[in-house]
Image 1 (spheres, helix red, strand yellow):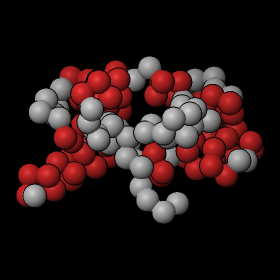
Image 2: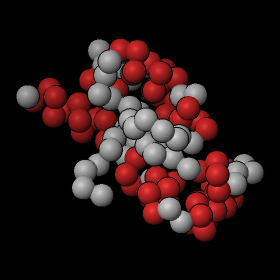
Image 3: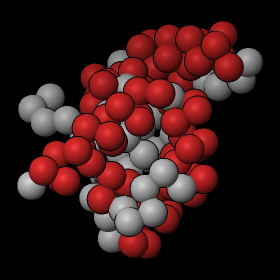
Length: 117
């Protein structure tokens, strides 16, 4: 992977185990992702549910990314990601931050860079 793909919410797609397993073309790796997420989240995913080409790419996405309100909003606003938004920190985004504090760190870093530049 040459460049990081950062989703609208700040998730680093290129570091996501589902993205990596999808790119590798390894069905067993996708099943391991499903098993890990099932154990963590109490879900019942199968390997096919974890196939994802990343938030910014055309193609396949994990179920919640297909219906993500943050993604839909950022696309409608024509944003690179939510760090570029005048409403940064909105309720939709706060939900993402509650799920993954790392996304806030990523977007805060981008936002700081925008403010300096």
